Image (cartoon, rainbow, N blue to C red; front, side):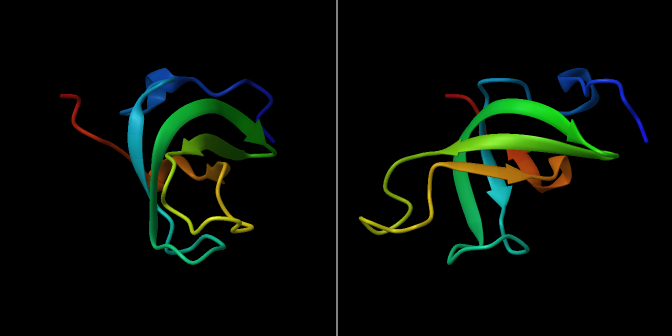
Length: 81
């Protein structure tokens, strides 16, 4: 098991980047979510990326929304305008 903290240097996105997440394998009604990278961490050998979702993606009062924890390979940076 790896004990070193993961680094954003290993990925095509950084803290605060606006990203699209392929959520097809995640729990919830959407196949993708859009939001901002808020953290990166490790759980055992797995790297976990936390993404704060943008407002308006889920119906009001939905149990989904907020932070989505996902694998780095699910994360795709969006073009900055």
